[in-house]
Amino acid sequence: MEIIENANLAKRLILGHMPFIGVSYKSKEKDEEYSKRFSAERAVRNVVEAAAKIGIYRFASATPGSSSLSSAHLRILRAMAAEGQKIELLPCIEIPIKLGDGDVSAFRRWATYANLDRKTHSKVKQRMVNDPILNFREGWKAQFRRSKPYAEKDFWKLTVDRALIADSLEYLADLPISSVELGSETDFLAISSRLDLLGELIDMVRNRGFKRVLLGVHHAGVTIPMLNDHLDGFHGYVTPLNPLGVMMFPSRVSAERAVRGTEKAVYAIKPLAGGRVDPKTAFTYAFSFDVESCMLGVSSISELKEDARAAVEVLEGNERREARCQRK
Image 1 (spheres, rainbow, N blue to C red):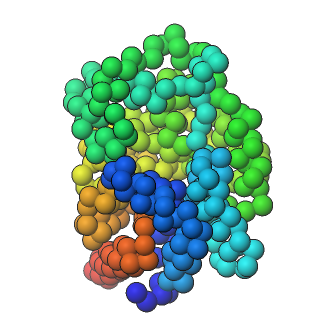
Image 2: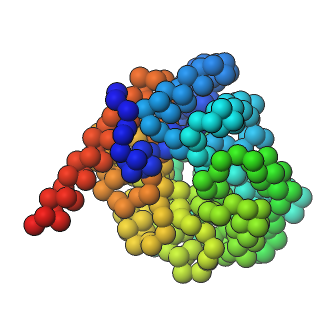
């Protein structure tokens, strides 16, 4: 693939990090394959440098405490930045929500979403049961079905481990950060009406010198309208957009409506639905929305070139259509 010479097009693409930390969204075996491959830092650097060479300079990442592989990925990006390469990072910080002395259960979080949304979205629980990326979690269906939703009385006992977030922010302080994303636990703080905690976290990130805060949401149809109306101080959303509706809750239609209805920036993730949609179809759909950027996760240089080529073709086609419309 040739270099992406159009700076505006290059800005619209972000290289994701999930394959580099051993996450395929396909199978346990594929995860193990990725983990083994990218345990060699040279393998990670080869793909990241290939992205930089074709003009992609924005990179998503996890925080160093997420896994040993995420630490290695960040070391590579830090080294490339120190070498003077043009790099912007968009790290995602998981929100460590606590209930009393324990952690909030991921399965019970999802059971809570299903319970609170069932009156307006009757099929939401079945969509969660059958979602291929959620099913990628070992034992998802059985554990989700038997998990008890949190009750309203639990919501006011929630706290956030701010020390863990502070540690992550300190590590990121000297990196070329474009935006900091607070993770998809955002959905739980929103649906539990704990926007006070979310607002405090946004202030915490900004007070550390990071100008742009993004909020990760997988429950866009509910979370985005709520945050649009009741929360300030953040730049935009990071949310799935793909034609299969994978990880778009409580329904694909409601998520689409929310994305189209917000004036905040939107960063699209999972456009290929974990490899279940071909690249041209995926990017045609994702860029039919007014998204700031679209994230692509790849496990090889050949995947990188295929996905980037498809994305650029779609973006260039959109630009040509817009130019024709302006001339009429």
